[in-house]
Image 1 (cartoon, helix red, strand yellow):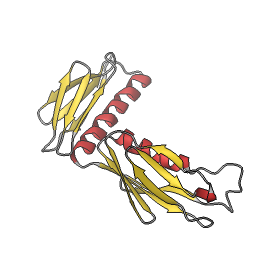
Image 2 (cartoon, rainbow, N blue to C red):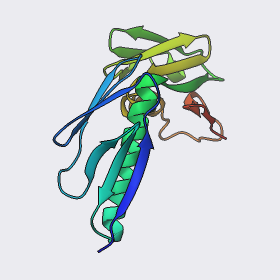
Image 3 (cartoon, rainbow, N blue to C red):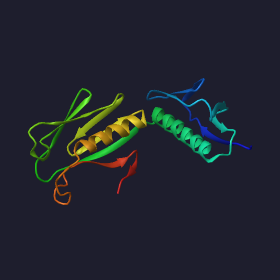
Image 4 (cartoon, one colour):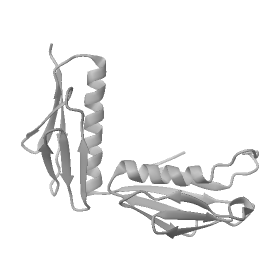
Length: 180
């Protein structure tokens, strides 16, 4: 069996350490740790890059290899540059307001509701509200994306016509890529 190898470049200012199946990435913005499954992917360091390899040519093994590479690339990018999601507050019927209280986000007066809707802000993620714009930033891409998704889902409208009631909080930019 031939196998396959993939390489991930390590930029300046980023340190990568390996401990058995755990990868630790340290950058100027923070430190990220992730544990990978032990069997299919072998992780090693070569000069200024990380070498990921598998022994098999099976499709599933190749998929796991690509996924591991994506995780490591996201960790390096998050630790060095940070991850940013942008959301937009949209309302036409009732003026909605958002407040950050610790690790909880309160959405008040959504569709004129008496009690505020609450959503959780995950660890190492900061939420900044300025007018109708919400910026979610952090080091871990998964936590930033999940916090943005939690915000969007908290204002999901059920049992009303979505053509009329378009109020809500919507993701407009995912880490520099605009959503159309």
